[in-house]
Length: 347
Ligand code: RIB
Ligand code: CA
Image (cartoon, rainbow, N blue to C red; front, side, top):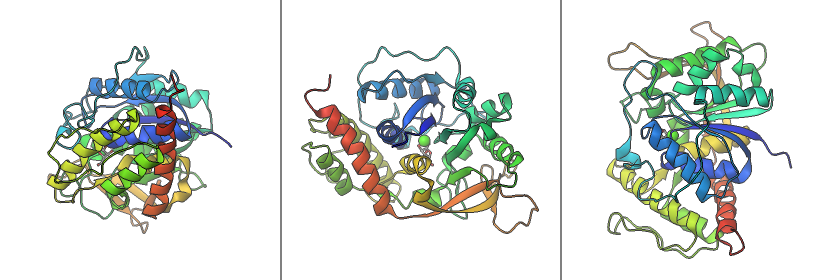
């Protein structure tokens, strides 16, 4: 079976971590860029290195990105992801080291190493992707596909009334990325697929689905409940399931506090699944741009479905997904990884 080379740009928080697990289980992850977002960039780096250690991954190069967005201060998301980005989860210590080049350079190096075959997936602010595009304007042609978790298309925001977190954290970077991909939108269909909140909020992890994941990993567990004492730690014997449950418990609590219920939207794992199989979602071409100057609307992704701007479509907007199909893939792929890590002969 063809194993897709993937470069992941993440602001590792809870859902980014699950997306990385999915990619480690089903793709050839050739590099990881750390971007400040859910937590500051140095914590994202530590989370990425610790996660690779936990998953027994090979020596995948992890790079450190810019300390700040292009032109505004970083506003992080500890209330949703926890002080270190992974809820209540603890990662194992690791001797792994960061690359001596930054994340923008890492994007360019990976694209040149896998010309025309590399799939990029960005699940955090687009700061480092924009810096990479400045360094290598041909990046859109070098990548086979780019999938972005970001934006909200004809849909409410989760950071301002109209803006989604990844775009809102660095609107200038997002605008440069969408413009950069537009510049290469030649005759063929645009090859950046965006997964906005309108799509990703259709895939909600629940305690029952989390228990299915543990079962797939052959790990005992108890079903998490909103009636549990906050911060209760997982007793699952499987190391990966334990980390996932401790991270997800905080994420469930954060969603519950915002009125979503005791569940958690798997924004980034869906983007990762689309990176490996774009056919997982229904998508429509449109022209996307980002509001930079609006006093009420800064960071909003504005989508022109009907060519009113007279500009070629620069993105495929994901508009629908069958949650059952996604969760079947996610639970199978990550569950098998967890089972392998939990078996006694893995060292
Ligand atoms: O708005 C959701 C996105 O913002 C996800 O990628 C989450 O990890 C945060 O980065
Ligand atoms: Ca993210």
